[in-house]
Amino acid sequence: MPGTESNGREVTPRPTVTEEPDTSVQLTAAPDTDTGATGTSSTWTYDGRTPGPELRVREGDVLGVELANDLPTETTVHWHGVPVPNPVDGVPGVTQDPILPGETYEYTFRAEPAGTYFYHSHVGLQLDRGLLGPLIVEERNPHVEYDRDIVVVFDDYLAEEPRLPSERGTNGGMGGGMGGSGGMGGGMMGDVRPPYDGHLVNGRLPNDPATFEVTEGERIRFRFVNAASATVYGVRLAGHEMTVTHADGRPVEPVDVDSFVFGAGERYDAVVVADNSGSWSLRADALDGNESPARAVFRYDSADGTDAPTSPSSSSNQLTYGDLHALSPLDGVSGNPDRTFDLSLSRGGGPSYTWVIDGQAYPDADPLQIRPGEHVRIRLTNRSPVVHPMHLHGHFFAVGDAVKDTVLVPGHMGQATIDFRADNPGRWLFHCHNLYHLDAGMARVLRYVE
Image 1 (spheres, rainbow, N blue to C red):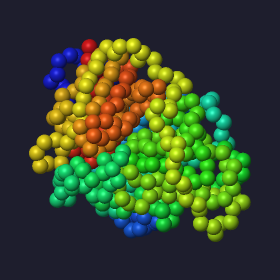
Image 2 (cartoon, helix red, strand yellow; image 1 turned 120 degrees about the horizontal axis):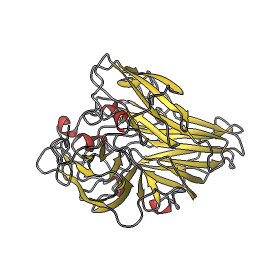
Image 3 (cartoon, rainbow, N blue to C red; image 1 turned 90 degrees about the vertical axis):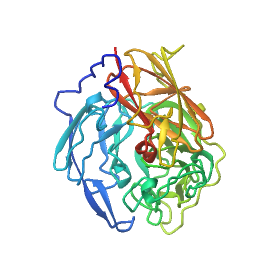
């Protein structure tokens, strides 16, 4: 395990719950043949579906999930965004031994705080084979009014087995990229995207889109999840304003927008008032690829079902991090930090496809050592031309006035600063949530010592 040779005695992680679960779920990870809207391909799924089954529990309840591994290789499950105790975080070689083929493993934890999360494999490139699903922890007292919620999972669809660019015969050097529009995604320089066949909304390609039927006057809370492996999406809904109410599951002061951008691992909740009858398109454009956008239909039950949905207009009021103001700011992160890390994100040197943090590629990388109770600040500088959605396990962090667990660091010397309280002992992965960047080394372990 990384960091065992470092100085300092490791702090014992807090244990997970031992009481009986309020909700018990059995999941099976297994190969599957997808013959639905996505064509015919070999994929891996939870319970024969991608996304996997929606897991929904009340805030504070104990959730028990027994995973049966029917895959031909080892696997784990990570509960993305939930600050679970370290032993059930699901990172092989860091928090648990991987689950071998034919074995089962039970994850038990208290589902808190409330929010929109998702679960996925944390082994190799398995996420891009379809091993993902939404996890919803319902508030006991929501701060916004709505009539019902709709979970919307965006994903990039790969019909073949995922492989690093170096295994496909290309390393993604300067000028070697596939597609791209520049902007947030980075465009043509410095990276290679997998050969995606398109983009999914709740498992469906745009030629057979998901349809969300609504009634005039309803207040719909959309729970948007970017479960993609390598895609930043720009999301728009035609004919309606979106009121963003949560960022990465955490409540914010409501802010009205007509679009938002989010990277792999990020989530936004937004309330939409159904006050403009008709049939409208919900669209997510891949800002770092040239594939057809993900699309769903937002249709009133009074609308003519044969009418083509109206497409969104150009954005004029896009959400920014500066618009987000947390209703419950993090405790213990005001003033000067106790410990600061200045880290750079970049491509590794040489011909291999490698991504590094401060020149080191995980797992051959020094741990970032912190002490319990510290206010920790991490300043990130992106020396590559492509965006990096950086995710911290086991903690929420402050980004300006927002509270999140994943932050986009723009390319071309873009910067981001995160602050968090060291309040969850253990070993925690900090990594780029572009799956290919992670697999090629862009990760570090935060290690609690005393």
